[in-house]
Length: 561
Picture: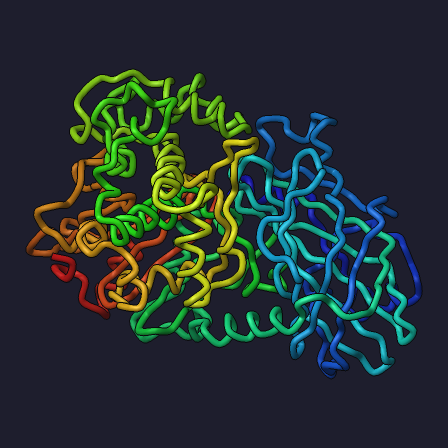
């Protein structure tokens, strides 16, 4: 609560109507002294669709005016001038319109020359007003290099009847990032070049397919009788200022929160970019190895030492041991101590693939036989990705990438958003997917993948080896996985599991699989394809009360056993 009051004390939204902002754009005003309410970035009543836009948008990245306000920065990131966090990367992109949606040609992680940030663009909105001008409101996100922190913002600009662009307003007012939070706003000279965009038809077709496949969205106010929003916002535990989004899949409907920011509701909640952090351990590492096992039959038992030269002394440790974080190699027996140790931070800061792999192979010595003890290491899941690529290279052409070649086609068949097509990679000649973190996704992406897994959708689960997936989903009572930090927690094939028996008063053990991500990200897979999720930077992973509320209207006890 103290933090929230602090935010409100210095963030004052101007008391102006959205028409005032658009009038200023059209008049050619370039000053942008205050952050605006995000309500200014949405179409007003009476706006029309107008003729479809297609062309290229370029911004002169010399800010004409703006501001920067720190919210949280314990590591003094902003104080380092080399980081240049008070500036944006170069914005230069092709846009295509479909209906009132304005679609960036390139979605997903776009690497930039900026020293600290890369860019992500997602679909926004375009509209026309009575005076004939066209407006573009485009969501974007900054993603920290070599990391998974996301800072969400939006662009607003106008295009007149002659095709000339106004200045572009850019601002950021939210994030899913536990250690670096800020507000940013600035105005830039913009150039719009109308003309055909290569691949425009395919861009529109993909966009239509993704839109059509989305789960029907309902507001939290439309929850079924017996459920209240507070059951899932958990604002008595997680302060609203820390929450990016939360939702519930129930009987095929996606009940979703608004996407709150410090500058009002985010204008493009469907397109909000969310980081995976360690959800990738499940969605990439776990499903990736299950995919290879289904294709080849010997992926789980393949030896790390046969696939990664830097791990030549790893003996009998298998890819399955890597996935289960049970390699027997660690410094501390305390489950999470190694991950938080200062010497281990080098794993996260090293950029080159060869160096990151060498560190992951040599940092921990062998303490016990593999498969006996669970100790949390993101480096284990990273090595799994390196090993899976090597495993594929022995069976296919050089340059095979398990994520690009095996998982992305599955995402595209669903089809999920284009964000899911790209994962963070290390640099250099031995580049490899991060695997343990580094994906980005939308609320619909996580809702649909999780619901399909929880509900046993054969179109998805048939892509993976059946037994490892069933065990990960806690459908194999004799194969729950190793204890993971508490008696009520297990970790199996990259998936967590929690025993809800005591919390729900079940007569028998009731193990619920879930995904978990750094900073306060949780996705719980429930019986019948139901899902509860939230993305926060609160540092809290709590969901027992939400599951208990759900159990009052839908059976949960005993369903997973």
